[in-house]
Amino acid sequence: MDTVVTNGIIVTSTETYEADIGVKDGKIAALGRGMQGAETLDAQGNYVIPGGIDIHTHFELPFMGTVAADDFETGSIAAACGGTTTFIDFAIQGEGESLHQALETWMERAKKAAIDYGLHVAIGDMTDEVMNVEMAEMVEQGITSFKVFMAYKGTFMVDDETLFKSLIKARELGALIMVHAENGDVLNYLINKHVAEGKKEPIWHARSHPPEAEAEAAGRAIILAGLAGAPIYIVHLSAAQALEKVKEARDKGQPVFAETCPQYLFFNIGHYELPLFEGAKYVMSPPLRDRGNEKSLWQGLVSGDLQVVATDHCPFNFVGQKDMGRDDFSKIPNGMPGVETRVPLIYHFGVNEGRFSVNRFVELVSTNPARIFGLAPQKGTISIGADADLVIFDPEKAVRLSVENLHMNVDHSPYDHITVRGYPILTMQRGKIIVKDGEFVGEVGAGQFLTRRRIEI
Ligand code: URP
Ligand code: ZN
Ligand code: ZN
Image (cartoon, rainbow, N blue to C red; front, top):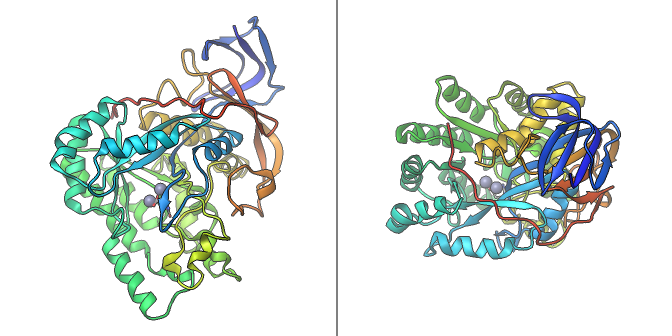
């Protein structure tokens, strides 16, 4: 073996057991005892989990007159420090652009990635060429998921015809359509109305994005997916009413998948009324919801109606970016950081607080994302033949999630007040140590582009 990881407790989505892990040529080559390796890594009784997989990031996203503060280098390093070894970002097709052009732009940006990555392609201009030629070419290249924005009128939003055509084609190709489910026309009307009435504080962002608009769009997307006979995946689900739509469809056996994100589990609409414009830090779409929604989302993670926790990592600095909207909430760039804090937050509040098992934690942050997005069995588990993307996770290590302790390229941490117990102490990608004792020791640009399989449902 090249490396043997000894004395760890291996945790997968289904098992917890003590064994050593033999790594050869970047892959897991053996599980058991008594292996010889050129190098030995003592896990000292800590958990060894498969590297986290965050299928929803926006590194270097040009958005609302600025650009997300983490690029592929800083964002992927931060991800690795937080126990994530794979991410999937979005190449977004602009009007008049081909999918190939969009992909080329994002592939160039992603060259700096320090961990492995894939790309979804967001369809912004559904031409005949896109539908009849390019979507198939994307799938051939290992891009097996497409995103459709039902919101952001005037920029990313597309109409129902585009959504429906995407679903029809995806079914034929074995691809997965992901939707940002909010009714963009309703939001647009409410945003303009509130601004015109002089209601410009951050709380009006939430009041312009009611949960009904999310539930309506989720329900509509689910119905259109059913009509097309295609599976569907709802990103950043925030509202209990939208979760009800997912649950209803799943109970009938429809292949509907959904993720939530940590921000919707830990914060609520009250955060928009923090003094000194602090509420701007939490302006994102969908917005934070009334108290009580968090409870429904946790319940969805427990029951299985929600299968994935991703981040929607899209950070903007408070000074110089969020404050672009100091006088008008509609100018506050939407999004918040999270790629580094996802794994420890879900462990602490999921496992330590007794909501679910350590196996379910692994399933939500690694195994299910790999399965749903065509990365299994190479990623998302600890089994022979899988990539040796391993995280040694100390269940007792306490870390305050303050800016000083984190690596994301942003001037604040929304989780500053939280100290989690349980934290990654070593991250390995394809057998190579890339983070040790909180410091990145890998290589910028060493991340590999992952071609993904078609969805199997
Ligand atoms: O506010 C958000 N979510 N910003 C990122 C773009 C998106 O909608 O995913
Ligand atoms: Zn979105
Ligand atoms: Zn997003």
